[in-house]
Image (cartoon, rainbow, N blue to C red):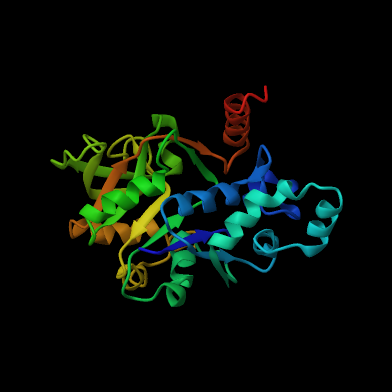
Length: 282
Protein backbone atom coordinates (compact mmCIF):
# COMPACT_ATOMS: atom_id res chain seq x y z
CA UNK A 1 0.00 0.00 0.00
CA UNK A 2 1.84 3.05 -1.29
CA UNK A 3 -0.76 5.71 -2.08
CA UNK A 4 -2.96 8.05 -0.08
CA UNK A 5 -5.90 10.14 -1.25
CA UNK A 6 -6.69 13.52 0.33
CA UNK A 7 -10.23 14.69 -0.56
CA UNK A 8 -9.85 18.47 -0.19
CA UNK A 9 -12.47 19.87 -2.57
CA UNK A 10 -15.12 20.70 0.05
CA UNK A 11 -16.44 24.23 0.42
CA UNK A 12 -15.58 24.72 4.10
CA UNK A 13 -18.77 26.72 4.73
CA UNK A 14 -18.48 26.45 8.52
CA UNK A 15 -15.43 28.70 8.38
CA UNK A 16 -16.84 31.43 6.17
CA UNK A 17 -15.93 34.17 5.52
CA UNK A 18 -12.31 32.96 6.00
CA UNK A 19 -12.75 30.10 3.52
CA UNK A 20 -14.02 32.46 0.83
CA UNK A 21 -10.42 32.78 -0.34
CA UNK A 22 -8.46 30.23 1.72
CA UNK A 23 -9.16 26.48 1.83
CA UNK A 24 -10.03 25.12 5.27
CA UNK A 25 -7.22 22.58 4.82
CA UNK A 26 -4.80 25.51 5.14
CA UNK A 27 -6.17 26.51 8.53
CA UNK A 28 -3.13 26.52 10.83
CA UNK A 29 -2.73 24.54 14.02
CA UNK A 30 0.06 26.69 15.46
CA UNK A 31 2.34 27.35 12.47
CA UNK A 32 1.42 24.41 10.22
CA UNK A 33 -1.82 23.93 8.27
CA UNK A 34 -4.06 20.90 8.65
CA UNK A 35 -2.97 19.46 5.30
CA UNK A 36 0.69 19.58 6.43
CA UNK A 37 -0.10 17.41 9.45
CA UNK A 38 -2.08 15.04 7.24
CA UNK A 39 0.87 14.60 4.88
CA UNK A 40 3.18 14.02 7.84
CA UNK A 41 0.83 11.26 8.98
CA UNK A 42 1.01 9.57 5.58
CA UNK A 43 4.81 9.77 5.66
CA UNK A 44 4.84 8.28 9.15
CA UNK A 45 3.13 5.27 7.57
CA UNK A 46 5.79 5.25 4.80
CA UNK A 47 3.24 6.31 2.18
CA UNK A 48 4.74 8.81 -0.26
CA UNK A 49 2.50 8.87 -3.35
CA UNK A 50 -0.08 11.48 -2.40
CA UNK A 51 -3.16 12.41 -4.43
CA UNK A 52 -5.01 15.66 -3.78
CA UNK A 53 -8.62 15.70 -4.98
CA UNK A 54 -9.28 19.42 -5.14
CA UNK A 55 -11.28 21.95 -7.16
CA UNK A 56 -10.41 24.98 -9.25
CA UNK A 57 -10.70 27.35 -6.29
CA UNK A 58 -8.33 25.42 -4.01
CA UNK A 59 -5.11 25.37 -6.01
CA UNK A 60 -3.33 27.10 -3.15
CA UNK A 61 -3.17 23.68 -1.48
CA UNK A 62 -1.04 22.47 -4.38
CA UNK A 63 1.01 25.66 -4.20
CA UNK A 64 1.79 24.98 -0.55
CA UNK A 65 3.66 21.84 -1.59
CA UNK A 66 5.66 23.54 -4.34
CA UNK A 67 8.96 25.42 -3.92
CA UNK A 68 8.69 29.20 -3.67
CA UNK A 69 11.96 30.57 -5.00
CA UNK A 70 11.12 34.20 -4.22
CA UNK A 71 10.48 33.39 -0.55
CA UNK A 72 13.54 31.14 -0.45
CA UNK A 73 15.69 34.05 -1.64
CA UNK A 74 14.20 36.39 0.97
CA UNK A 75 14.82 33.89 3.75
CA UNK A 76 18.35 33.21 2.53
CA UNK A 77 19.16 36.92 2.56
CA UNK A 78 18.09 37.15 6.20
CA UNK A 79 19.60 33.80 7.26
CA UNK A 80 16.18 32.34 8.02
CA UNK A 81 16.27 29.31 5.71
CA UNK A 82 15.40 27.07 8.64
CA UNK A 83 11.88 28.52 8.73
CA UNK A 84 10.98 26.37 5.69
CA UNK A 85 13.29 23.42 6.30
CA UNK A 86 10.56 21.15 7.66
CA UNK A 87 8.25 21.85 4.73
CA UNK A 88 11.02 21.52 2.14
CA UNK A 89 12.03 18.18 3.62
CA UNK A 90 8.42 17.05 3.42
CA UNK A 91 8.16 18.12 -0.22
CA UNK A 92 11.38 16.29 -1.13
CA UNK A 93 10.09 13.00 0.28
CA UNK A 94 6.67 12.98 -1.42
CA UNK A 95 5.27 12.56 -4.90
CA UNK A 96 2.24 14.85 -5.24
CA UNK A 97 -0.44 14.69 -7.90
CA UNK A 98 -3.82 16.40 -8.08
CA UNK A 99 -7.21 15.76 -9.63
CA UNK A 100 -9.92 18.38 -10.03
CA UNK A 101 -13.35 17.44 -8.70
CA UNK A 102 -15.66 19.65 -10.73
CA UNK A 103 -18.76 18.89 -8.67
CA UNK A 104 -18.96 18.25 -4.92
CA UNK A 105 -20.93 15.00 -4.99
CA UNK A 106 -19.84 13.36 -1.75
CA UNK A 107 -16.83 11.56 -0.34
CA UNK A 108 -17.52 8.44 -2.38
CA UNK A 109 -17.44 10.49 -5.56
CA UNK A 110 -14.21 12.24 -4.50
CA UNK A 111 -12.52 8.88 -3.92
CA UNK A 112 -13.78 7.60 -7.26
CA UNK A 113 -12.09 10.57 -8.93
CA UNK A 114 -8.72 9.13 -7.88
CA UNK A 115 -9.26 5.81 -9.65
CA UNK A 116 -6.97 6.55 -12.59
CA UNK A 117 -4.14 7.47 -10.19
CA UNK A 118 -4.66 4.46 -7.95
CA UNK A 119 -5.27 1.69 -10.47
CA UNK A 120 -7.18 -1.52 -9.86
CA UNK A 121 -4.59 -3.75 -8.21
CA UNK A 122 -3.61 -2.18 -4.91
CA UNK A 123 -5.15 -1.09 -1.64
CA UNK A 124 -4.82 2.57 -0.74
CA UNK A 125 -5.48 4.92 2.15
CA UNK A 126 -7.64 8.01 2.57
CA UNK A 127 -7.07 10.88 5.00
CA UNK A 128 -9.56 13.68 5.64
CA UNK A 129 -7.29 16.51 6.82
CA UNK A 130 -9.92 18.23 8.96
CA UNK A 131 -9.93 15.17 11.21
CA UNK A 132 -6.77 16.20 13.04
CA UNK A 133 -5.23 13.27 14.95
CA UNK A 134 -2.31 13.29 17.36
CA UNK A 135 -0.54 10.44 19.10
CA UNK A 136 2.44 10.05 21.37
CA UNK A 137 3.82 7.18 19.27
CA UNK A 138 2.48 5.81 15.96
CA UNK A 139 0.10 7.88 13.87
CA UNK A 140 -3.42 6.59 13.26
CA UNK A 141 -2.62 5.68 9.65
CA UNK A 142 0.55 3.82 10.66
CA UNK A 143 -1.48 1.79 13.15
CA UNK A 144 -4.00 1.01 10.41
CA UNK A 145 -1.29 0.03 7.95
CA UNK A 146 0.04 -2.50 10.47
CA UNK A 147 -3.48 -3.88 10.86
CA UNK A 148 -3.81 -4.03 7.07
CA UNK A 149 -0.90 -6.48 7.01
CA UNK A 150 -3.10 -8.92 8.95
CA UNK A 151 -6.27 -8.19 6.95
CA UNK A 152 -4.99 -7.35 3.44
CA UNK A 153 -8.29 -8.08 1.66
CA UNK A 154 -10.47 -5.98 3.96
CA UNK A 155 -11.51 -2.37 4.07
CA UNK A 156 -10.45 -0.80 7.38
CA UNK A 157 -12.16 2.20 8.94
CA UNK A 158 -10.95 4.11 12.00
CA UNK A 159 -13.64 4.56 14.64
CA UNK A 160 -14.00 6.32 17.96
CA UNK A 161 -16.63 6.57 20.66
CA UNK A 162 -18.84 9.61 20.13
CA UNK A 163 -21.44 11.13 22.49
CA UNK A 164 -24.96 10.09 21.57
CA UNK A 165 -26.05 13.63 20.71
CA UNK A 166 -23.35 13.82 18.00
CA UNK A 167 -23.90 10.46 16.31
CA UNK A 168 -26.20 12.05 13.74
CA UNK A 169 -23.18 13.75 12.15
CA UNK A 170 -21.29 10.53 11.37
CA UNK A 171 -21.37 7.12 9.79
CA UNK A 172 -21.99 4.75 12.71
CA UNK A 173 -21.00 1.08 12.71
CA UNK A 174 -22.81 -2.05 13.85
CA UNK A 175 -20.05 -4.41 14.98
CA UNK A 176 -19.16 -7.80 16.36
CA UNK A 177 -15.91 -8.61 18.18
CA UNK A 178 -12.99 -10.42 16.56
CA UNK A 179 -10.52 -12.52 18.51
CA UNK A 180 -7.35 -10.68 17.59
CA UNK A 181 -4.76 -10.40 20.33
CA UNK A 182 -1.84 -8.93 18.45
CA UNK A 183 0.05 -6.59 20.80
CA UNK A 184 -1.40 -3.09 20.69
CA UNK A 185 -4.64 -4.17 19.05
CA UNK A 186 -6.34 -6.04 21.90
CA UNK A 187 -10.08 -5.23 22.07
CA UNK A 188 -9.67 -2.61 19.36
CA UNK A 189 -10.55 -4.62 16.24
CA UNK A 190 -14.10 -5.48 15.17
CA UNK A 191 -15.90 -6.91 12.19
CA UNK A 192 -18.47 -4.48 10.78
CA UNK A 193 -21.88 -6.02 10.20
CA UNK A 194 -23.51 -2.84 8.95
CA UNK A 195 -23.24 0.92 9.12
CA UNK A 196 -25.63 3.83 8.93
CA UNK A 197 -24.84 7.30 7.64
CA UNK A 198 -26.02 10.09 9.98
CA UNK A 199 -28.52 8.00 11.98
CA UNK A 200 -31.12 9.29 14.39
CA UNK A 201 -30.44 8.37 17.99
CA UNK A 202 -32.91 5.48 17.76
CA UNK A 203 -31.28 4.20 14.56
CA UNK A 204 -27.68 4.27 15.82
CA UNK A 205 -26.43 0.67 16.23
CA UNK A 206 -23.54 1.69 18.53
CA UNK A 207 -21.64 4.74 19.74
CA UNK A 208 -18.70 4.06 17.41
CA UNK A 209 -18.43 6.58 14.60
CA UNK A 210 -16.21 6.44 11.52
CA UNK A 211 -13.60 9.21 11.37
CA UNK A 212 -11.56 10.40 8.42
CA UNK A 213 -9.09 7.54 8.07
CA UNK A 214 -9.68 4.65 5.67
CA UNK A 215 -7.79 1.84 4.02
CA UNK A 216 -9.71 0.65 0.99
CA UNK A 217 -9.27 -2.45 -1.18
CA UNK A 218 -8.65 -2.13 -4.93
CA UNK A 219 -12.18 -3.30 -5.76
CA UNK A 220 -13.76 -0.34 -3.98
CA UNK A 221 -14.16 1.67 -7.19
CA UNK A 222 -16.50 -0.90 -8.72
CA UNK A 223 -18.46 -0.94 -5.48
CA UNK A 224 -18.77 2.86 -5.39
CA UNK A 225 -20.23 2.75 -8.89
CA UNK A 226 -23.05 0.58 -7.51
CA UNK A 227 -24.06 3.24 -4.99
CA UNK A 228 -27.01 5.47 -5.83
CA UNK A 229 -26.85 9.15 -4.85
CA UNK A 230 -28.66 10.05 -1.64
CA UNK A 231 -31.33 12.72 -1.27
CA UNK A 232 -28.65 15.42 -1.40
CA UNK A 233 -27.38 13.91 -4.69
CA UNK A 234 -24.15 12.81 -3.00
CA UNK A 235 -22.45 9.42 -3.25
CA UNK A 236 -21.57 8.37 0.29
CA UNK A 237 -18.56 6.13 0.89
CA UNK A 238 -20.50 4.70 3.85
CA UNK A 239 -23.02 3.17 1.45
CA UNK A 240 -20.23 1.58 -0.58
CA UNK A 241 -18.68 0.17 2.58
CA UNK A 242 -22.06 -1.25 3.60
CA UNK A 243 -21.93 -3.45 0.53
CA UNK A 244 -18.53 -4.77 1.60
CA UNK A 245 -19.72 -5.14 5.20
CA UNK A 246 -22.54 -7.38 4.04
CA UNK A 247 -19.81 -9.59 2.55
CA UNK A 248 -17.92 -9.59 5.87
CA UNK A 249 -15.10 -7.50 4.37
CA UNK A 250 -14.91 -4.43 6.62
CA UNK A 251 -12.88 -4.03 9.80
CA UNK A 252 -13.45 -1.26 12.35
CA UNK A 253 -10.38 -0.19 14.30
CA UNK A 254 -10.60 1.75 17.55
CA UNK A 255 -7.36 3.66 17.14
CA UNK A 256 -4.96 4.88 19.79
CA UNK A 257 -4.69 8.64 19.97
CA UNK A 258 -6.74 11.83 20.12
CA UNK A 259 -8.83 13.15 17.27
CA UNK A 260 -10.16 16.68 16.84
CA UNK A 261 -12.96 17.54 14.43
CA UNK A 262 -11.41 20.60 12.84
CA UNK A 263 -14.24 20.77 10.34
CA UNK A 264 -16.00 22.98 12.89
CA UNK A 265 -14.82 26.00 14.85
CA UNK A 266 -15.11 24.43 18.30
CA UNK A 267 -12.95 21.44 17.38
CA UNK A 268 -10.41 23.66 15.66
CA UNK A 269 -10.09 25.90 18.72
CA UNK A 270 -9.72 22.88 21.04
CA UNK A 271 -7.00 21.43 18.82
CA UNK A 272 -5.13 24.73 18.72
CA UNK A 273 -5.27 25.21 22.48
CA UNK A 274 -4.22 21.63 23.25
CA UNK A 275 -1.32 21.79 20.82
CA UNK A 276 -0.23 25.14 22.25
CA UNK A 277 -0.19 23.61 25.72
CA UNK A 278 1.63 20.54 24.46
CA UNK A 279 4.32 22.72 22.88
CA UNK A 280 4.38 24.90 26.03
CA UNK A 281 3.46 28.01 24.09
CA UNK A 282 0.77 28.87 26.65
